[in-house]
Amino acid sequence: MADSELEIARLSREGELSRVRSEKLAADLKSLQSEAALELTRLQTEIQTIETRGKRESFADADPLFLEKPLRDDGILVISDRRIPLNGMIVKETADFVTSRIDYWNNRDRKLPIFIVIDDCPGGSVMAGYRILKSMEASDAPIHVVVKSFAASMAACITTLAEESYAYPNAVILHHQISSQIAFARLNLTQQKEFFQESTRWWDRLAAPVAEKMGITTDEFIEKMYARSTSGDWSEFGDKAKELKWVNHIVDGILESSITLNPDTKSKAAEKKTALVEEIDPDGKVFTYLPRLNPKDVYFLYNPDGYYRMR
Image (tube, rainbow, N blue to C red; front, side):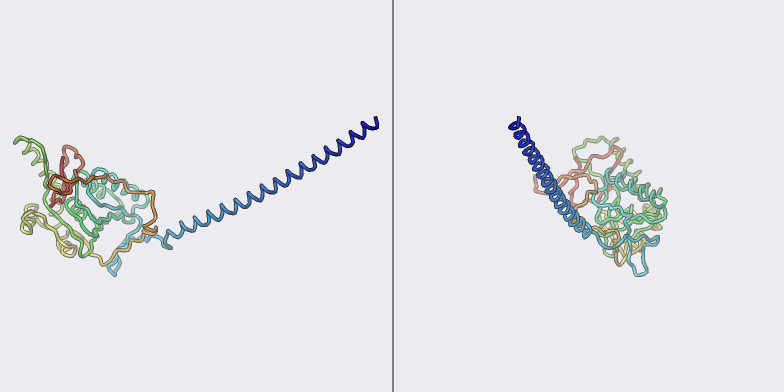
């Protein structure tokens, strides 16, 4: 019995020692885990700080300027972030892009101007362009169109018929008659007549208000076009276009106050565009096929080199 009691006591001591050792190891492990978690948290915080600092450095220390009268006395036009780019050929997607943003900026504020900024636009679909014009007319907020480089055909009509418009002195604005190219189409005389009448109806709707703003008749407008060029392409630099009332104001400079994000920073808010694939014809000339139009639509497009082609 004595030996048994001694053995039991020994085993109890060893069990107690094992329990204490286990608790000690668990405590050491928790301590190590806590230290590792603290270090991980510290490193994550440093990474977040560096990333946040990098993102912050992508933004300028400035806010967009919102002016009801954006043309300053020094001839500088101040454009806010109520800005809608209009570049490339005008198609259905272009009209969707522009008109939805006109609606959005109206719902934000109906007094401050909305800017449609044209860098380079050769024109395009009259249906799409007319949607933009009607959206401009329906807008409570004033629509100001700005031409920096080139506006032709449908884009020229949008510029001239805007409530307010601006251009650089050396920007080019080009007006001409509607002309359509029908490739690989067999039209009888009646169909040709109908096509001509359809184009004429569109021309009357677009040219008449432009001619009226100029203070001349539509026929006089056409005569002046062909007096300048046998092709009927009447182009003028901005300062001359102002004299013809194609544009309201000539600006010495443009302050894009909304460009506060580094242009080299990738933005998820990319413009939706219709991709036009370039091809090479048997003569080695580069061209692209135009998107399909509504059967009642026509292209109002400046295309002297045949780069844009119909299928």
